[in-house]
Amino acid sequence: MFVDEFYFHHKRGLGRWESIGHPVDTFFFLLPFIVCLNFAPAEVSENIFIASSIISTLIITKDEWIHTEQSSPSENWLHSLLFILHPLSLGVLYFYWQNDEKFLIIFQTGIISLFFIYQVVYWNILKKDRYEIKN
Image 1 (cartoon, rainbow, N blue to C red):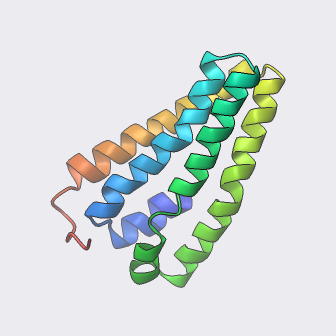
Image 2 (cartoon, rainbow, N blue to C red):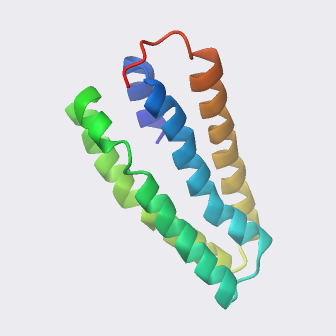
């Protein structure tokens, strides 16, 4: 993710759709983590976790028609790897949750939250007017 963000995105810039859409992706990725931090594993909370994980996995694909137009083949290849890692990461989160690995969940939630804040501030406040709006 960091190569995608700090190499590819900074190299080409982001249009309006992506500058809003990427924090949306991160927000939806945070939802299963929030579930794990606030609820013990039980049938209802596990169903909420599974639903939020499925939504998150589907949401991240929303930008692909833009990526095919604006991204290099190497960036698109990296996205395909990230699409594989996304549900695997959520599966690991589920394992941590089931085994009460609270510290790891808190740590990961903190990192993802910081990344979300960075995306909102950097692309939508600091860089808002610096890149040509492509979409």
